[in-house]
Image 1 (spheres, rainbow, N blue to C red):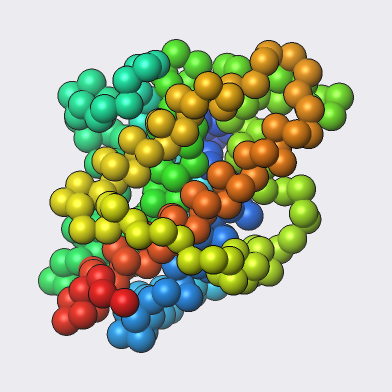
Image 2 (cartoon, rainbow, N blue to C red):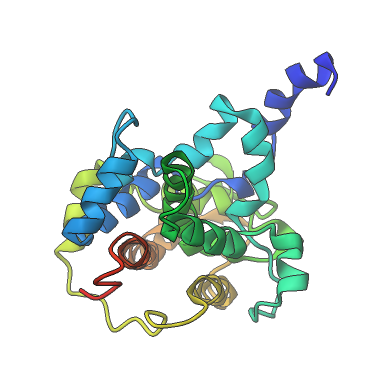
Length: 273
């Protein structure tokens, strides 16, 4: 790699499409907080051991690490950029790997890879710790509906709106504004969500391809007739109407992440609660 390109790469990554971001730091931390609440004691202890060298050795503390790579490890950020999302063709939410995840370069394949790496206790701790950090992030990503949206508008990045007098695209609206109206910190927000009526039975709980089903769920949300607001002026009603959907996806992501980590790190009990 030339010296010029090495200096230019961080700039290019900073200008890359926002399809590599999801939920913002608030949403990712909420998923981490919710998942940690649901870990088995043995799994929680193993999480603490694997993350012992982290500045904040919790699932919430590492939840945004995969996005922070743009500032800390530009090579790994570039390598992992396509792992944060997948693109369905508009009108078809059935996952077809060669079409939707060529060469395993999508969020579904990344979740599967890092779950297997985390589960393999023969691997080095550093490798399993990295797998855990990626897994925490990508399970949250796949539950942001536009991270399994349509390729023709790059997951809503090309769908422009005007919100509160400022330009914003639909993807950024879901990343940063759907959750930010109450101005709550992640711990407080997660605590409030955990006190809601329990979620209904999860039909993906015993699936042999859960990440696929989570992505297809997100695609179906994006496919709903009222998900795309009319282009142009956007009223606050859209945000309020969709906040409940976003919060449900965060709760589902937290529960599913915990179940996955419990299987990986507490094999005697598996994913049972």
